[in-house]
Image 1: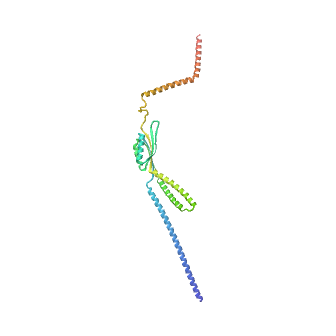
Image 2: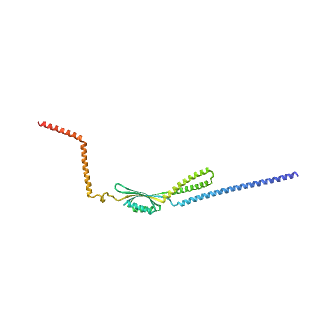
Length: 298
């Protein structure tokens, strides 16, 4: 083989080697590009999933706002009234409360030294019947001396409690699933402890939610009543006639005389030494004066 042929073969082999290297590089770069595109696609999918979750969260929040569009108000009222008869007024109020589907929380009655009666009643009626009950109560009484109606908006507090309760229930479900899959005793104990804590927090939140629901479902009305009639003791009761009054006056007179006589006896007996001394001094002065008069006459 000539030297020129050898160089030609060597050049051809070198070209073939370069072609192979370039093709392998192009395939590797192509594969890397494909992997990058796949990662990019995965990232975009994750972002899309997160966006969907965020949108669902926003939609849920909007749904919650729509569901709570009716404001949750705690209504309270205080009435100060005058009534002709306290017993009759209390009976009418109790009857109205039952008709409206409410209940009595507290009922008190008082009587002062002038035989004037007053009372206090605290009732709870359904929120829808709150204004109607107030109007009926004011129509039943003789005079309204004072009226105070207040309302407390707890809508935001209720929505916040519902949101926290929903989150805690999700954590509870997750812990329950972890407990089923736990294989180690240490993991099981740790999950049980966390689950008990979450369940306790759920009970507290449920209690607060139920309290707000009850307070907004029923309104509280406190009624302070006072009788307007004037009570005159001893008039028209028929307990004392003329003879009884006479005996009573005679007894009063005798008691006065006995008390006076007793006082005089106590005075003289208690001051007897002083009285005797004064008597002796008086007698002595009397004889001295009488003796001097006799000497003057002589």
